[in-house]
Length: 177
Image 1 (cartoon, rainbow, N blue to C red):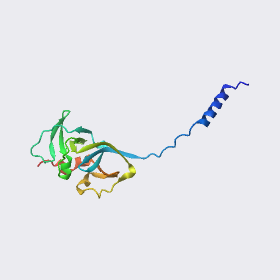
Image 2 (image 1 turned 60 degrees about the horizontal axis):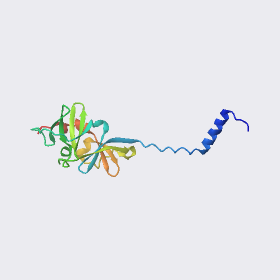
Image 3 (image 1 turned 90 degrees about the vertical axis):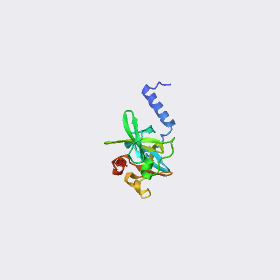
Image 4 (image 1 turned 90 degrees about the horizontal axis):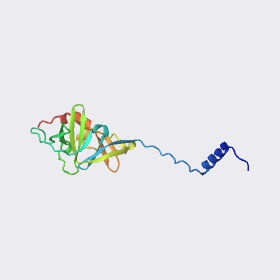
């Protein structure tokens, strides 16, 4: 038996490994997606852009304020900052939020506005395929059009809600009763 040079041994091993190797998995088509913070008000599902929600809090204790509209629930001290607390359901639908245990506060910080929006429940980060997005908001209540950027469709419709658009709204800034 003749002795093979080391290089030829390596080439032989490489060939046999390639013959025995399983094929690489086929690369799946990458689906572009959009992510946001999902929340619920009543039976309606909303999603806010991640960049427009500073944080999500359990409902803090707050102090009632006299002479403000009924959807302003009060003001809370959050880490040394005064956070106005707004019942988003009452503001948008004239019905106060009712589900105490699941309620959360979405903190919005945009330009001069720092506010906490009470929602019935936060459903965590939601991911949507971009092809499920539609700018058609005709199926949404007209009072929400000012804050809507479109909808994503899954098992139910998710309205893309802009807290920044809310913070710029004259009606939202008019808090005096």
